[in-house]
Image (cartoon, rainbow, N blue to C red; front, side):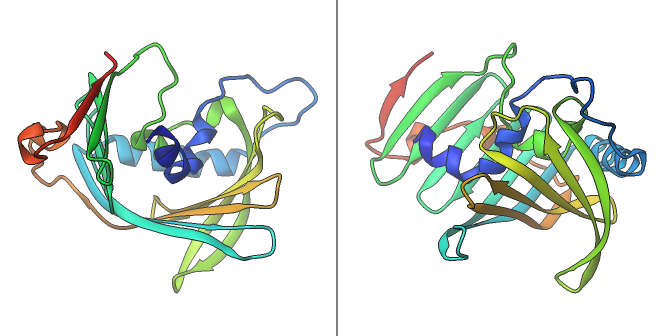
Length: 219
């Protein structure tokens, strides 16, 4: 189950480093920082977020490795990710990972001391310590003009060498992760709604709604 969600959120491996830029690596583009800071500040102002997402994967030759789509809900530190056959719930203290095919849910505790990989981090200031970044200019995406920012990881042991963010009107439209083996992963966000009323029980796995579910409690 963890492997499935690791693939789904491959773009989020960019949040796991915490190194400072070594001397001699150069400086980040201040214009790019202004844009990224604005995206982070805008997202932090939302009380709740609901959005659809798509994840497209292809290899070095351009062959599709699969597509996934789903919905993400966020409220403070709480989140819920739903897609065909799989769901992940987090109420800020516990994480439930559910796999429909096995009708099994794994429960674990949130570790506040860890560099947790969460949907919220996709939209906030993950970039300052982990990357050098620059503004490439304006690109077309979905008929819209987007600002493209290129991120280069400071930690060269990472499996990817470049991340491209497309930003339009202060929001991230898509994130492309380019791996050293040639694989590409594109995470796109659409139909984002902010400020809607989302109840706290949205982020809790209710065993009553999943008859016969096998519970693996690792807390």
